[in-house]
Length: 178
Image (tube, rainbow, N blue to C red; front, side, top):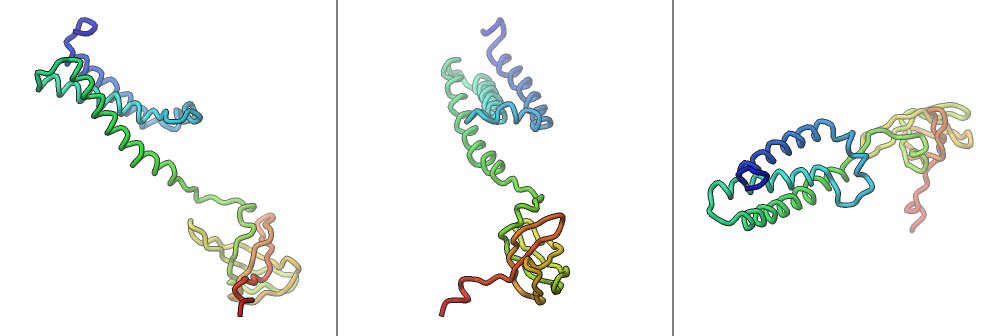
């Protein structure tokens, strides 16, 4: 007996209540993630899954075995710790590190290598493409020192301002080796 209820009833109600809280957390997780950002190893998804699995395991063990209540609780906690650890290390950590934004800033283009697809005339504009992990970016380009750059040349982006990238011909270190 716990709080005047049978133990399997406590496990069942805990499972139902924490299961509902878990569903709400999944729907509104973006709001709660900021609260736990700076605390290492505290992830609400892992804590909720630990409590849910513990209560489910406790309920099933209490219902179908004749072990003591304390032993049932310890076995349920051990099983839950193992499963919660697997969820954390093999699902949540890879998902968090896999977040990649498709957005880029003009400042992030500096130092990248592109390819001219529309020739750049002296004191004029052409177009280059930059291949990134997120896809191909096409940008208006002009020579950094107002030089002409031919089609299909590789260029190094020196800077980017107001939607235009300033480029120079790219001279790879491999070109100078004999």
